[in-house]
Length: 228
Image 1 (tube, rainbow, N blue to C red):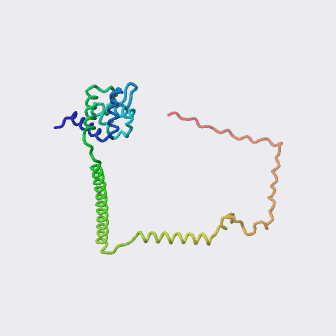
Image 2 (cartoon, rainbow, N blue to C red):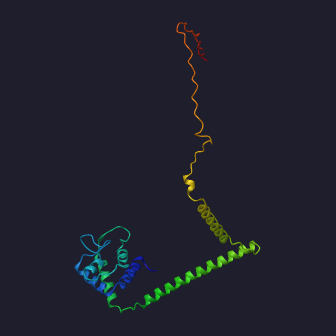
Image 3 (spheres, helix red, strand yellow):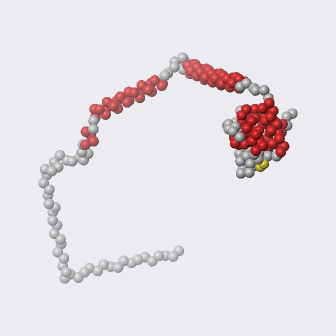
């Protein structure tokens, strides 16, 4: 049974093998001229192995090495940045030396794996398209069986109705024009303006006799509220 530490070391070796040779050489020399840390690219006191390789002239994409290095040192996902131990740097150096001394592996294996993956994706898409086509055909057959063999194409009928409606509205707009916008909407009687206006009848005010005594109205008796 593979232990987590052994698996982390195997993943670190695999990520090292994926680096270009010049990057591995630059990283190996950078271990001697820099203080190696883990958990970050740099903290002011040291640098990670990848940044050490960059400073030594082995600049390349990070690929999977930083995550494998942090996992091997036990700080991945823990937001921890610390100097690498001598044990960790020693194992990294050993893996770099073994990777550089190993025979060159042709990249044709990766190309074959990529081609196989792409072909599997294409085949999967073709199978999905075939399944959708079969489901569509089966659905049409089911509708035909339910309708007694008579299939109604509602899509074409709806589109024909829309075209007819558009033509009718266009024809009505052309015939009507825009004159209706300028027509008066106020309806007046036929004899408006021909009938003479009559003066209102004058009503003479009733003469008032100032010598007559004013009439005294009887006082109104207010009802007292009854307390209940």
